[in-house]
Amino acid sequence: MTVLSLRGISKTFGAVAALTDIRLDVAAGEVVAIVGDNGAGKSTLVKILAGVHAPDSGRITFEGRDVAIPTPAAAHKLGIATVFQDLALCENLNVIQNLFLGQEIRPLRLDDVAMETRSWELLRQLSAKIPSVRVPVAALSGGQRQTVAIARSLLGDPKVIILDEPTAALGVAQTAEVLNLVERLRENGLGVIMISHNMADVKAVADTVVVLRLGRNNGVFDVAEVSTEDIIAAITGATDNAVSRRADKGVPS
Ligand SMILES: Nc1ncnc2c1ncn2[C@@H]1O[C@H](COP(=O)(O)OP(=O)(O)O)[C@@H](O)[C@H]1O
Ligand SMILES: [Mg+2]
Image 1 (cartoon, protein in one colour):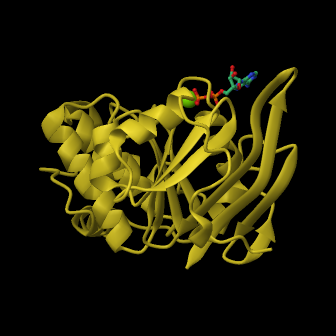
Image 2 (tube, helix red, strand yellow):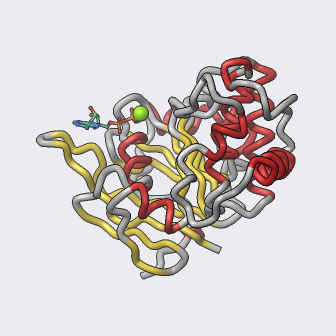
């Protein structure tokens, strides 16, 4: 079931066409990788879905309804969570404190014990390997921090989670840990959008890969059927796939 659809999304910054006529579909329980060279428009697309930038034109459909995402709060309310590349964790605070940071304004106030219980629940749901929730985030590995940032984004019970380059700063073992986590997210029925530069990660974990080039779609591929070479050819522009090959991915008219 499609949870999020974009049609004809365009965004300019002055004279720069950052995105032109972008189309994207994400289903519940699907991992969609968005790939593209520097300047392809990936971050702009993430920011539109996160309520940071408004598109100039186009249509966003969420759970079958046309929606606008004017603010980050609106994205959160709809059920779109974004884990930005910088993670925005507080080094000196522990895992629980980071998970619940900024949640104080919610109607549901939790006490210490409840927060610790909820923290373990979330981390267990992700099969996360965090030794203690009472250690400062500064003491955690890169993979563990990514896990904490993802767990935090799950507190709002989102339907779609967007991960911006989740493995960019990680070594081999930690990358495997984070990819495992992405699989847990899919199993939990979330629609996952993963921005990535790493073709091995894309092949390992994504169901669908969407290529952006110079702000335009340059192919939508079923990961099981596409070769790494074909993805790279679409990224570099060696092939022109401006019209989607995935007719079965459907257009709600
Ligand atoms: N806030 C901004 N102001 C002006 N130009 C921007 C802004 N954000 C992005 N751009 C431009 O839009 C294009 C797409 O950028 P971006 O979305 O960051 O690409 P990517 O994340 O794929 O590297 C680039 O040409 C970039 O310089
Ligand atoms: Mg970027």
